[in-house]
Image (cartoon, rainbow, N blue to C red):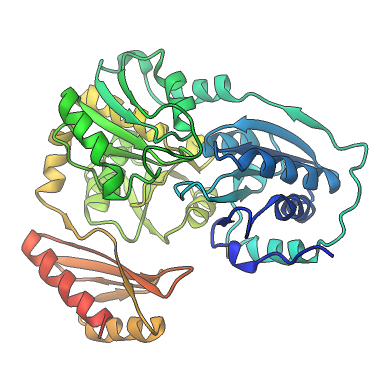
Length: 450
C-alpha cells in the first residue's frame, strides 16, 4: 500500500518539505504523474538545484511524468529561471524545478509550471494537483511513446540574458558576487565572462549542503560577509543570490543593503528609459518610492497582490513591461513574464553605467524621502479579529482590501496581510520621515497585538 502524501507540503506557490520524511522519491513520482495528467501534457521539463536529494527527486518526477505518457526534457542543474525559460522557449506543456530555494539543505521541493511557464498556485492548480497526487496509488507502466532527453540550456540562456542590455557599454565595475554555494555559482561566471564587469567571487563552489551560510540574503546574518567584502575590496557594489538563483539582492558601495522596493524603483527607471510610457506592476507592500518613481519616469504604476502567480497571471492579461516585489522577485515581459535573478543584476549595472553614478548616489533621493519599516511578523491568536481591529482603528484613512488590509494617509501608509501558512500577520509600513515611520510602526503593532 502506497503511503499517504502529507497535504501540508503543498504550499501556496510550491511543494516543499523535509527530505525524506515529508517529501521523497515516491511522492515526487506521483507528483510527476499527476502534473502530466492534469496538464494533459505531452512534454515536460525538469531541472534541479544542487541539493544532494535533488537528482533523485528529479529522476522520480520524470519517471512519474513518463508513466502518464509525457516526454521529459532534463535540464540538469540550473537556476529556477532557466526552467521557466526552457519550458516557455521550447513550447513545453509544463515543468518542475526541484528546489527548496533559500531553505536549509534538509528541505527540498518542486516549483511547478504549466504552459508558458505559468505557475501553479494555491488558487490555480495546486489544490487539484494535491487531489490527483493523493488518488494516484498504483501508477501504470511507462508507455513506449514517452521519451527522455538531456538538454543543455546554458548557452541559449546567457544569450537571452545579454539581449536585455548593451553588454559592451557596461562600465568595468568591481562587483562582489555571493552565490552562497547555490546554482548561481554555475550561471554567473558564464553571464559575466564576456562583459567588462570585474567579478570578485564568493562561494561560487556549487555545494547543496550550503556549507558557508544559508542561501537566503534577506536575513541580515547571511549578508555580513558580502558587506565586509564590498568594503574591504572597495568594490562598486555587491550582488547576492538565493539558493536557486531566481532572486538577487544588492549592497551599495558603502555597505548598505538595498531594500526590494528601492530596487524595483531603479529597475522601473532603467526599463522606462528603454520603453517610455510602459505600465509597471508593483506589490502593495512597497513604499511610495515605487509609484512615485514610475510616474516621474513617465510610466504607469499598477498595484498588485503579493505572489508570483498573481503577478504572472496579470502580466499575461495586460500589457505590463515589468513587475517587482519587495521580496526580491522581479518579473519581465521579455522573459516570458517570469522572474529572474540575473536580468536585474544586468539592468542595474547598465543603469549605473548610463548615469555615471554610484549605487548610493542613485539611491540617495529615495533614502532621504521614503522611510520603510521592512516586513515585521506578529503571531496572533485570531487573524480575522486582528484585521478587523486594524480596519476599525485606522478607518480614518483610505482603506483597501486587495490583500489583507491597506491604509493610506497623507504622510504614511501601511499594509497588514496574513501569512499563507502560519498564524502570522505581516506589517509593511512607510512614512515621510524616520520619526513618523517609527511612531506609526509601533502604533500599528500595538493594535495587531491588542
